[in-house]
Image 1 (cartoon, rainbow, N blue to C red):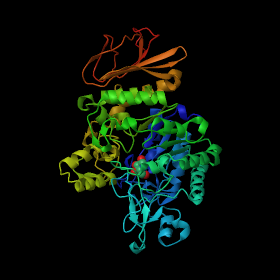
Image 2: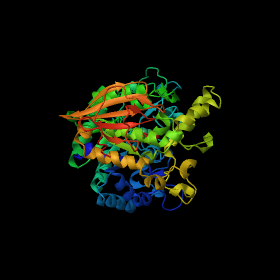
Image 3: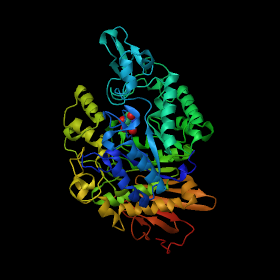
Image 4: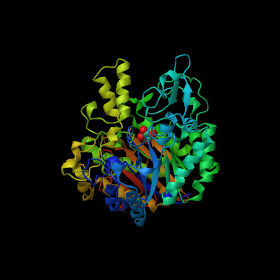
Length: 549
Ligand code: NOJ
């Protein structure tokens, strides 16, 4: 196990949108290499690389057609090896995205299954329809039907796909799959990667294929959520593969609650090292993620607190390639964009757990500025539109749902500078660049002593040398409508974090005194009132007149 994973700052790169080195409008591996010094300067320890494997790109690489090859748009295996070596020479490790719930339907295994080879048919979940009906009543994560005819429709066979129909689910009851996946993991670990972010890992094994209990979107989930079979597979992968390397896993675990998460990543159980939970990402939705409600900071505070206290070690994140941008979701944005982005980073780094950030978060990038569905590429958004149409939801309501929730909000190209193409590409970008790139970009932010990235570097560096921030226990001190105060305690060391989730000034709700060690305002407040979106980290033992910054 990579012993340092708890102390690492992990930076997620979505390769398509990070940096395009050859002007084809798509980010690539040489582009990533050209930005390694930038990442080093930010204080990044680990890069989580979203999939770079060969893929027909139905779901932007999460549909893999060859696990041991590189997507040609992104470069070659030589480019990948160079990336690994160049990152290593800067003290940066790389973890890969391991997508093993499904493959692409263009993977050789699926092709051979379609060609009638029994061995490969048994790699997938292929079931007979029942009297002209589908094999069961399950739902699908992409607002689609999870069953698609397999081969000749006259055979009445269907294959399961919990995501797009180009992502057939693997049959984890077949021990042959286990062997194939071990081989793939060893291939990358032998190259020197530091582990895996394991895609939807808690649903890989299905307990049965019976009809499920009716649910708004995911009827049938009780048949595949965190099954005993999945636990056994994870323990075996850990024992047979991961434990032989200096590497770690973080599982993307959908729909988990705290007991489930504990079972998946408790150190004694030796399954995963960490999990990504989602409850805090669901604080502004009702039922399914496409139905958003107003953001209520107190709900977020409560959920964060529950997980901080309920799980031994958390992953702390507010963004990834599937989530709208945090500064748009959780702050007013506009004139408060930068200060709000810094407050959210302050909160994130002050929580107990491994910090994960997503490209662009370090400069406060915002949700995409899409004008219509035509500008959206994400398959999920297009499926949601179809579903909403079928429910009789008319435009502009359909567009209203999608504009707020689309995953493309986070996938707009990285804004490096204010030149045409935002320094991302010299060609036509694969996805619309946010027009605010003229103001919001790395070149401009990084020379601003009060910029978002300067704050990112400061709090990241602070956390690395602060045993109490790294490891101290968490306790909430105040959860108000707008103001969150909590402490971190380790022995006799203590730090207090205060966040104002509002553009309105607010009183500090409980008596707090001491030295402000980090603040998102240049001069720390001293009149006991919080300014808009103010964040402060306070050492109660320090002298308040010693600003320490
Ligand atoms: C979760 C990934 O984060 C998402 O982008 C993808 O579409 C699904 N899993 C399916 O692989």
